[in-house]
Image 1: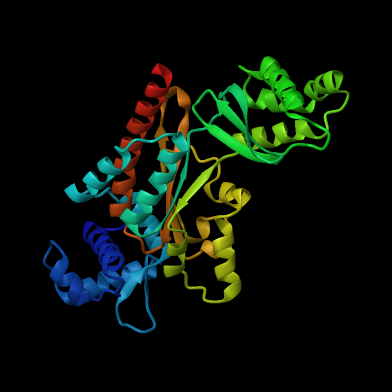
Image 2: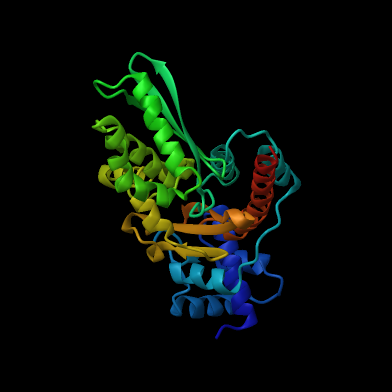
Length: 346
């Protein structure tokens, strides 16, 4: 059990180190603390905190820094979000206040804004789309034997995929396939659409065309693509500014992390907590032992919940970052609700 003074000392060590990056000694604490005590008393309290594993000594300095256990204690017991300044609040308001064509544009812009505001790596995920239904498929010729297949879903998502017209198939046949797909699949959830494309639709297409020539596979691919979680990442390279791993394989592993959905799924998990902080070895990837991850959900009513996250060093400014995420997700929720209302009204 920590005394009030020991709590103040731990909080000040975390604040000072996360803001300035320098180990903290008893003299600095004596000058900064709101209670006036001697340097000797502070050293005794620091010795207890060190014995408990909450702070540790740096080899190159007589000062102390928070340990991973210390950061965890701080986050669980002492952390309070820091209010944004007017400039930061205006940046968010202006950035989310622009006109967006698609929901992906909002979520992508959010990742870029969060990265710019924090100088860390930001990840965003749009609301879950389990109940999204198919509004229809479209095909647009783009020259030669190339066609753009477009999937439009009820939540406003638009997914496109370019493909080559299968050998022996003309534009009239393609139109017939398109009609079959739309006649039988519009209004069904994307999961149901994918199931039908793997079961009865191939037989139906073959009944009309005597062969599907791989055309059904193209529709399967675009539905699968549309159903996948889409992570948007801002400031990918920022992670290298805080990595203590300097070998090429570790750097390559960190950058590869952002290109693989499976790894991102493992990192972010099925986290539906309102706000969550994972520190160091609490993360699922050993390459991230020197990092912390703060995640926050944002609510878009009947459209589900999305996720925003900040990946930074264990010495990140937790209070400031948490305050930023808390404000940002409220603004993002409101902007997404506006977008969907406009979509429903149009």
